[in-house]
Image (tube, rainbow, N blue to C red; front, side, top):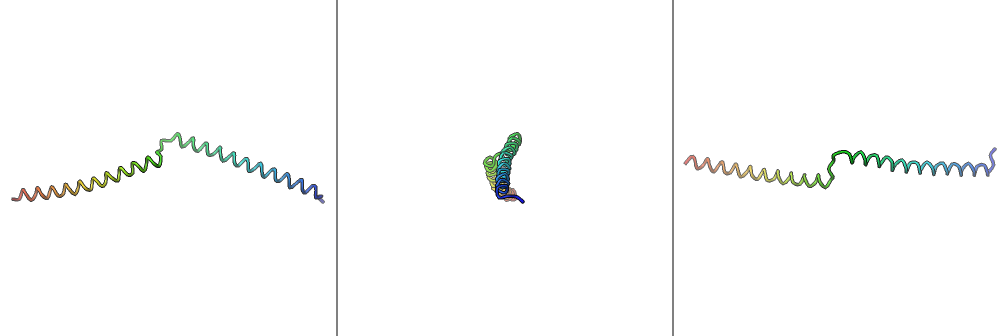
Length: 85
C-alpha cells in the first residue's frame, strides 16, 4: 500500500505533467496560428474594409444604373410621343 508521502509525490508529478501539457498546447496553438497566418498571407485575399468599400461602390453603381434606366425609358416615351405628332 502506498504511503501518504508516495501519494503526494505522485500528485506532484501528475501536476507537473499537466502543467507541461498545457504549455505544450499553448506553444502548439501559437505554431498553428503562425502557419495559418503565413498561408493566408500567401493567398491573394482582400481585407474586410476593402471588400466593404467595393461593395458600397457596386451598390451605388446599381442604384445609378436603375436611375439611368428610368430616365432612358422616359426619354424613349417622350421621343415616341413627338414622332407620332
